[in-house]
Amino acid sequence: MTNWQILWDARDQFWSGFLSTMEIFGLSISAAFLIGCVMLFMLEGTRPRLALPLRIFIDGMRMLPFLMLAYVLYYGLPTFGIRLNAWWAGVGALAVYHGCYFAEIFRGSRLTFPPGQIEAAKAHGFTKGKMFLRLILPQIVMQTRPLIGNQLIYALKDTAFLVIITVRELTAAANNLSGTYFIPTEAFIVVIGFYWAVSIVMEIIIKQCGRFSAKRGFDHV
Amino acid sequence: MSETTLPETAAVSIRQLSKSFDGVEVLRDVNLEVAKGEVVTILGSSGSGKSTLLRCINWLEQPDRGSIHIAGQRIGVDDAGRPMPVKTLARVRARTGMVFQSFNLWPHLNVLHNVTEAPIHVLGKSKREAEEHARALLEKVGMSHKADAYPNTLSGGQKQRVAIARALAMQPEVMLFDEPTSALDPELVGEVLAVIKDLSAEGYTMVIVTHEMAFARAVSDQVVFLEKGLIIERADPETFFTNASTERVRKFLERES
Image (cartoon, rainbow over all chains, first blue to last red; front, top):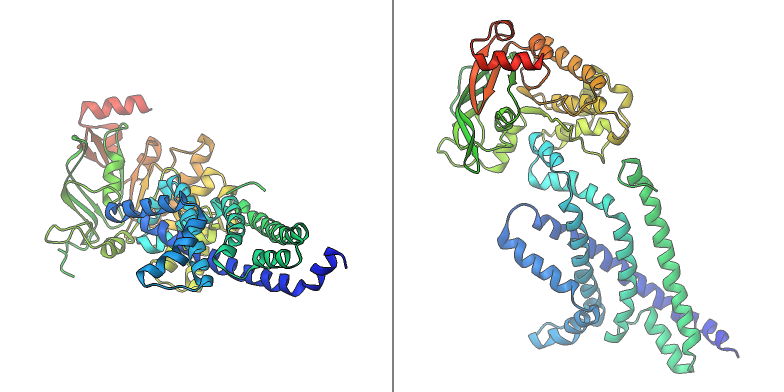
């Protein structure tokens, strides 16, 4: 039996690992996106008592290796009586970590948002919340589309770290098989193929979304 | 409502308005009444405070002293002199329509949705009603053929006409124009001025800051001239342009013509 044959026979393990990875990724990146939007809103206007701690938190997260955060949530929190299972610790860590990245991406774009548009919104009777949801956020998302695509790929790759806190995902499946049959090269090549495939599909989707924003003059595809 | 009510006729009533930026007084005790249906143009050299005055009317600038009433309702502060709650301020602002020098359309929305956005999400109109009204207004400003276009595909004059329709859609008590043609190529100025002229003929109340003298003369009921934050001349357009009482205004007009 060749090594590839062994892997083919174990395809169920890969498949369930892949589904698990996609589930973790889908859930955490959606949460991260929401967290980014909420943080951006909280940074709106002049509320230094809120903005300063939030900026410190965002920067603190961005300057932290993701693995450390996963470790702290999984191994560290029980010290304080909070016990998350590995799966939730992983999803939570990804959501918060990449939420901070999203917040920073959005904040950068918000800094160059045309003030005249804000004035027009005020003059037309918009209050802060609606102005943010209807006028600011949609434009920021269109403006930062390429960066969002990049962040999706980062987040997908970060899911692989969760093998270290015992989450049973795609990399864990490869790890497992390579350990059992001692065929690390082939097992990891398969997994790399999975990560590449998902990333390429995401790239294509994000690129297609560019047409939507290009029509509105946001970028040129 | 506890706000002081003023005679029905005043669309805008400005009393003893003062404003300074970093210790420089840009408005000094300005008084101005704009009657319902009246067109007032504000002239003056740049830095005279005319844009600031206009922007105080809908509280985009906050004056230091004095009061402004929009159709009898005070804007910005309540009777006790405290800042208005933001929701109340937004409601009063919605009673004014503003047209900016740089258009400030929302680029992610097409022309129709630029016009319906505030009526739906601020005034709470139904989508159908707002769109019907918007199409009528776009027709009025000659932009109905571009209802589905996005702002980035329009010329400056077209953008400004859409911006006018967007402001009109709020059915405001007063329309405020802040140098509406200053950012336009000379050949596009005419189409925007023509729209504003039509509005004046229809009886809209308007306050216009402009550098277009012939236009001001044709469209105004009242012309005021600001100099260093003071209104130094106010007159009907004929008197203003042919027989101004101050030397400063006569000089200004000479240079502009």
